[in-house]
Length: 140
Image 1 (tube, one colour):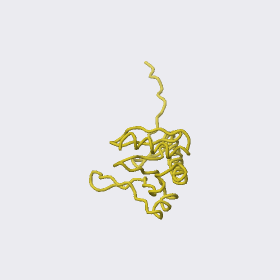
Image 2 (spheres, one colour; image 1 turned 120 degrees about the vertical axis):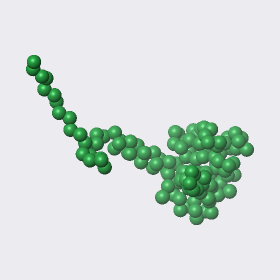
Image 3 (tube, rainbow, N blue to C red; image 1 turned 30 degrees about the vertical axis):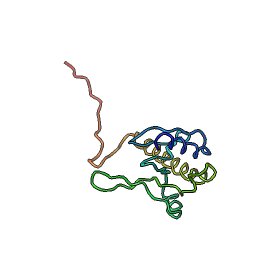
Image 4 (tube, rainbow, N blue to C red; image 1 turned 180 degrees about the vertical axis):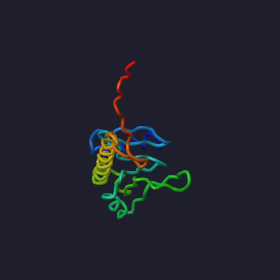
């Protein structure tokens, strides 16, 4: 399927606004307005989910994206869509909105973590932060 399937998936996500794909890990990553909303792997479309949206995908009979990790299978936060959603942008729209919601929440969480990780650390698991003292110049 390859590039033609990626183009079809981009058309299906058109209700989210401008979308683009990027080759990655033997598949494609799909972005809508710079949010990473979906991936294509093994000729299947997987949309981003989170704890708020995953149950909707599971209830519709969708399947999670699982890849072989170093030691065990790893379940990712991407799920397939119902077969009928692959037929038109209108049928994909509610699923695409759920993916955008999950992607936006993940991006906000990531930005929040980045802000807190750039603040000075007062203490760590290794103990308190080192104090630095101003040196007084030596008189000779």
